Image (tube, rainbow, N blue to C red; front, side, top):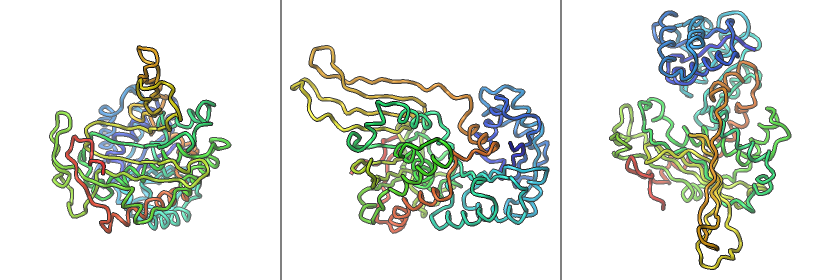
Length: 453
């Protein structure tokens, strides 16, 4: 197990909200001992003492239920290096020490090639690992070039292209529900399933993230970055094991089976929009183009929807709808599996059968099955919902991912060819949107999004 973690871009929101609480969780669970050392590197003119104070303050704010001694232990041995993360000399100072190191690039994707080059020039100790937050590259060509740079630096198994969605309890339970229950797997195909909808709708607006979000938008930030991963787990063939090779091979198969989109397909099967002024809950939200740091000429979307089809024996004839939007009326974060109607109802005119829908709630985590049952009167149909909440795991999603990095288990990280295939799926959408073949619609903040066509 590696006991040194270097975070490049350590003073950002990712570290404060996710990485530091994850480390505190690992310490509280007994997964990190006194040998573990955190090194932060960023542009701020800070001392190590100032960095430790910042860690303590951030953990007081975001550390959740983890005990004070676990939070204090993370800060106690932390050190800080003021660094230009694209400078090989500065990076060499940050990674200096005995033994292998895990280097976490908590940075904008546009910096990845230059930082990886700096790491190569600085010289990583044998056995070191590289961690990159998705999106991996900014397009297919960028992902391919970044893969080439990484291949020159470390073996593929030492590259962790992480996506915290894959470590969520409910996301993991998608596989558990499918593969461990005879009631589901035999009907997990296009004969019985009409549509699978993968949704991440949120009431949150930009929340000060213009520096990142305005350069990527909803399609890259959520659909390419996270929702395609959920598609892989929902649609993959049962793997022989959940080991890294078997699991990743089956995920790549799904992406390779996605039917390529023509320009006409993109026009008919995709939507994009951005929010206008409105009210979400008790908050007035300005138009996206009026948010601080936004450049209206970029025409960045805050809502994206893509409909895909898979050319495979299991899924031919099933629609897969991937959707994400910001500043919407309500949070809706789920995978909804919509089954086809039964072929015949022997109940006359005593009501309609509701479509059976199996919902994997992502946030909050849970499971709901919408059914039709007999109502208060004989032969009268009525809806019935069965709901279960998931027990939280001992580690948060980022805690699970960091533990995998430090112990060297890449099963939940993204393999290089998978990252490229994900960009291949969406390249036609990016191209058509850039040509303005799909109109940029608008919707009031606090609404349900752009109206259906």
